[in-house]
Structures are given as structure tokens and as C-alpha cells.
Length: 380
Ligand SMILES: *[C@@H]1O[C@H](CO)[C@@H](O)[C@H](O)[C@H]1NC(C)=O
Ligand SMILES: [Zn+2]
Image (cartoon, rainbow, N blue to C red; front, side):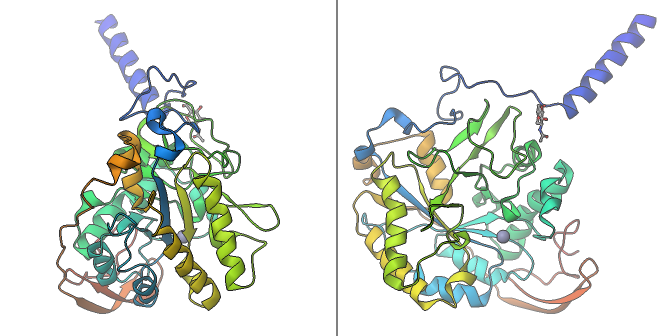
């Protein structure tokens, strides 16, 4: 009887221990870590391809709330654009919930763009995100997947990615949350050290060798989720920036902005062709017509280079899992989006007890009872 109790107690301790402590990641063993589900952090091109046989992917991303106002900019800059292979371009939206117009989310989805997670509240201070627990992240980001799927009427299984607010990860918790919530990749982790040649996306089965710029970074072994390193740009003063609109020493004229974009792009294109990130907020572009024009010119150039492809971020993960040379890649069918209907519905004056504000919300579903928020993502 006593030994049964002891065994029982040991089992309980083992369980409790397993829940708190994740296994520490060990140095990566490339023989054990293989495509499609595992990849060591490295600057090597997937599939050992030569740079000239490697598609140069470009990831244009926009962050924060999707509104009618910023969708006007998106319509003008990115709609009806195709890559040199005639396939429609991809763009990824890391959207947060507060102030988002879900009719616009539905429209962007139907244009073939990728909708990704950036939390429900995007709350301040930044330290909230730094110390966020696994449970808090599940409520802010895990639940956001169902929230978007419901109000924008798009399939939840088309939502694959996350970017932490302020690029502030919470170490292991962020990736444990991704594992539970079925989120394929993160795009919050800058690297200033592995920029030229750039670091390719990788998994966390083994220890990451990436520099940790905004800690805490994960150190446990967490199989499943991918990291798309944010390869920093170099500004005109030689300083790194994770997002285009976070660069400090910036150009003045349209021409200088164009040169600036191109110079940062060339490091990738004439290097190991690691995906080139063009990470920006629409609010930076709208009041700056010269930046707007420089972006359009830059995209026009990219869209005419035969081995350059602006794609949705999740398409890069698909390629890294199964790398094929550019001459095969161009023969593939273009991405297809099954149309998602929207019955536009306006919900005026929804109250949130959390923020003590009233919101005007537009959705493709029925109106919620109260303004949706953390802990009540559907506003029931
Ligand atoms: C992540 O998990 C590892 C292994 O359990 C642990 O050593 C490390 O302190 C954790 N880091 C954070 C920031 O939670
Ligand atoms: Zn943001």
C-alpha cells in the first residue's frame, strides 16, 4: 500500500515538473534536424541550392489595425500587382483587433493576402508583453485566431503567423502558445548579427544561434513553430533597424528613399537570398507622398525581376520545408484563395467595460453584444 502511494506521489511530481520545466534546447544536430519539420538556425540556403537557383522572396508586411482609411492605401499600392511570373503578389497583415474594420479584413483576404495575428489589445506598456504568461498570450493571441475568423468570415486555418506587439516576445511562453494555438511561424525576432549573409527561417527543436536583441528569447526545445528572423536593415548612419519606419538616419527625397530600399535589398539578392523583409506601418506612408512614390517605384522594379517573388509569409515556410530551384518554382500554379463571403454589418456604439470606451465596429457576421476584448473575443 505504502509503495503504491509513493509511486503515485512520484507520478504527480513528475507531471507537475513536466508542466513547468521545458527541456533545454541542445546544440543543433543537422543529422537529427531535417526538413520538412526541423531546421537548424543557419545562414545556409535550404536544399543546399546555389544563390542563383534560389528564389528571392520578398515579405512586405503591414502591422496594426486594419481600417477603411489604411485600406485605401493598400488598394492603391498593392492591389493588381503581379510578380514577374504573372502570379499575384503576396503581402502579410499582422493585425490587432482594437479599431479593426473586419469588412476590410475580408476584402484583403479575398485579394489573396495573408491575415496574421498581432494580439487583441496591443496594450501598453511593452513590459506587459515581456512578462506575459503562457495563459495571457493564449487569451491575447491564441483567441485572436477565432476572433478574426468569426468577424471577417474567413477560415481559421488560413491564419498562420504572429508578430508580437512592439516585437516584444516572452521567451518560451510565446512559442509554447504558438504550439498550442497551431500558429506556424513567428515574425518578431530581429537579428543584427546574421544579416549578410542573412539567417534563413528555422525551428526551435534545437538551440537557436540567433542573437537575442529584444529578450527574453526562447531557450527551451519547442518543436513545431518556425522563426522567420527579422533581418535588420542598415540605415544611412550605419545603424540597424528591424522595421523600415524605425530607421533613424533616413533619406529625404523620393530618389534617396528608392536608393535606400534598393541598397538593403541588394544585400539579400547578391548574397544568400534569405527572404527580404520590408516591414512597415501604413501610418508612416500616408503622410509622406515621396515615400509612397519611392515604394511604388521599388515594387515596380521588384515585380519585373524574374527570380524575385513577393509572397505571403507562410509561403516562405512552405518553400523552406520543401525547397525547389527557381526554374521549378516558376512553373508552379499561382496561389488560389477560395472566396469568403461578407454580409457587411455595421455595429455602432459597442461598449467595452475593459477600456471604458464605445466603439464603432464593422463586421461580416452578426453584431456582437459588447465590444469584443480579451477574455471575451467574440463579444458575447
Ligand atoms: C525557457 O526554458 C528553459 C528550459 O526549461 C529555461 O532554462 C529558461 O529559463 C526558460 N526561459 C524563459 C525566458 O522562460
Ligand atoms: Zn504593432
